[in-house]
Length: 122
Length: 122
DNA sequence: CCCATACATTTCCATCTGGCTATATTGCTG
DNA sequence: CAGCAATATAGCCAGATGGAAATGTATGGG
Image (cartoon, rainbow over all chains, first blue to last red; front, side, top):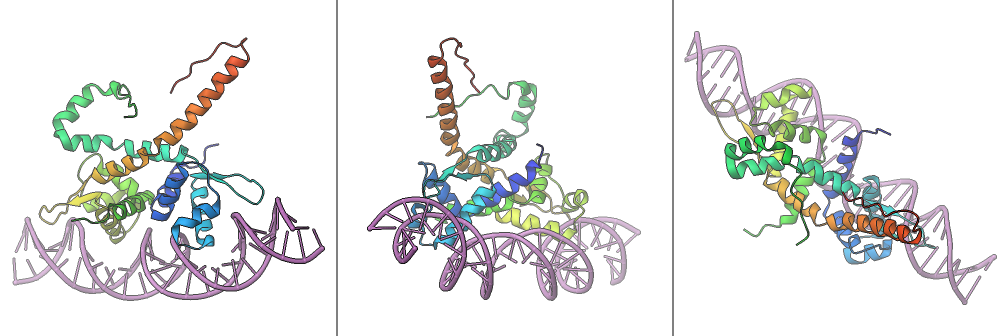
């Protein structure tokens, strides 16, 4: 393997750019759902939702099984994780704006400690 | 005030969906740049880059000053932070999958006592 | 004052996107 | 097997998007 990971980010961010798709992901965060269950709250036609699901699937954000006529959709968080990591690379930008160059210089000095901080759920 | 913050996320993710714009942000992470400096590495026309900058500005991801004829562009990380936080809400999804995997592995270890439990965090 | 420099705006074009309706497919069920 | 229920696919349309080329607008320098 070695497919361009940048193109994958394209699709992930493009998928997240749509509020309907973000809402679908929000719903899927609570567990699997069928297509009709996903259609219900949105006041959109079923084919429209199916198209959104295809976009999400193309971004790797969801995957689908088969259970009789049902095609359960479940969230696949790996691409989200990669997107978060991409954004995380810019974290020093907003940390910089807080403490200005001062903090940046200090941070340079402790650069190898970057991964020390662990975050527990609150 | 009271503008929908969801629309802001729309624009942020849409802005991040384009590799050129992500590259522009990457360049800006090293500090301010003029438009021409941003045009140089991209083999795209200046108006095209200006358009990209407008999209980034519309998402709040960059802001611009004025210095003589120059319009220095600087990164504005706050929207990135909000996007990261949005994605972070789904962190439990991949933590859950890790937990499930972890539990599964542990369960295997208990069933087959010949194998010592491998504690493999992060 | 005029021109070069840096950038924005306008116009045009091809392609993509999100929505719909209509239709096809697939698998259960009577 | 007929038919329904769940979902996918196809075709269509309006509007957004990314690109280029041409032109407009400030600002500083000779």
